[in-house]
Every structure is written in C-alpha cells, then in structure tokens.
Length: 135
Image (cartoon, rainbow, N blue to C red; front, side, top):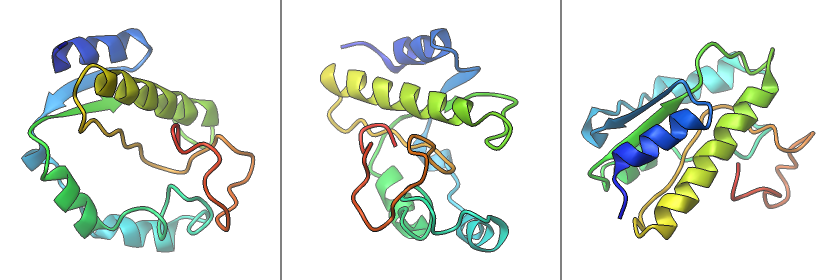
C-alpha cells in the first residue's frame, strides 16, 4: 500500500498548490458556514453539493471523526466566479485520488470539496446528480 505522503505528492504533481496530511481531530466544522451559504450566497439551494442538500455540520463532524488521517488539498488564488474551471479541476483531482486511494486498499477513502459544483451548466436539484463520482 502506498502512504498518504505519496498521494500528497501526487496531488501536487497534478496541479494542486498544497496537499498536507492532517489529523481529523484538528478539522473545525463550523455551524456558521451553513448560515453564510444561506444568507451570503445567491446560489443557496441551487446545487446538490451545497446547503441545504449537503451534509449538515453535525453529520460532517461525526463522519470526519471516524477517520485517523486526512489529506487536505488546495488550489491557491482562485475565485470560483472568476475562474470556474479551477473549482472543477480541484473536484476532479479529489475524485480521481479518492478512487485511486480506495483501489489501493484504503476502503474508507472519501473525497470532499467545497463550493458549488460546475460540472453541469445548471444543477437540477429535483433529479439525481449527473456526476456523482466527480461532484
């Protein structure tokens, strides 16, 4: 089995600016974020990857607590409105690495990204996601 260090290096080679191994207990899940989405984003309720469709803070805290290590990845200096392709690039890299890590025997591997998904021109919240393995 490869180590998380190997996957972190691979993430950087794929174009991410940072990829760090973290302890899940150091991840802070704030309840305020969901409210910021609801009252500070014009896309609230428009994407299956965003509130109110995304996991609640309590659920997210519980899920993260079931892991012993995490891999935090970042693309620096992007604005999803100025460069929407970068958000899709991050989602694709996270999804591809999740699959590779899973196939390498880490069966609890699960990738998460933030912000609205841009794989579809418009997200139909009344239908199942058309890109569940990437979104």
